[in-house]
Length: 227
Image (cartoon, rainbow, N blue to C red):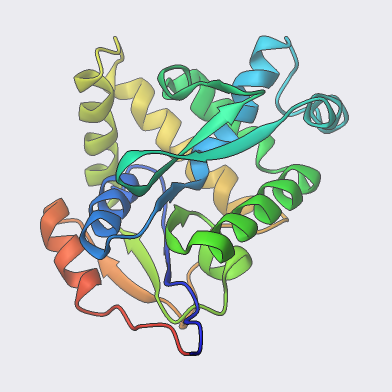
């Protein structure tokens, strides 16, 4: 009997658009793993900060990377969580400071090569819903299930602000506005695997849609893998 290729769904888009929430719920509906690729970069960003290294210093970051083990662990419900040197760091990597560090280290080609290889291995072994900024252009460009989520900047800033406040973070909206704009500029301007839309994606404007409405829109367009 022929073995079917695993289902891979790529979701890309800018900061604050709701990719993580959409990807998690879509994975639950499809009963496949959910892989938050941004958590991998955040884990390295945390390690760089803990080491007292400037995240924009490419040579120094590469030295930290060489001594760092970022791995993935599948838990209950198919969720794949990230481990940093064998320890769970989910509670430590969701701060604005770590997010900025993650965005900075992600501009370095050596970092992206290593993370992309890990993401590809995980996807080929398990399939799943992967979200990030270059899943459909770099990690799995061949998947027919490629979605680009977008929303108006003001909407994204507001969503990010509420997300951080709900986590108990003491942040100002002005700071979140600067964070989102800085990340957009960095993600779109980096030389290696920049965030970009191309016609191979299905584009979804989530400005006026709830998470469930976005999930419904994506689920209706999912195509089963060939073979």
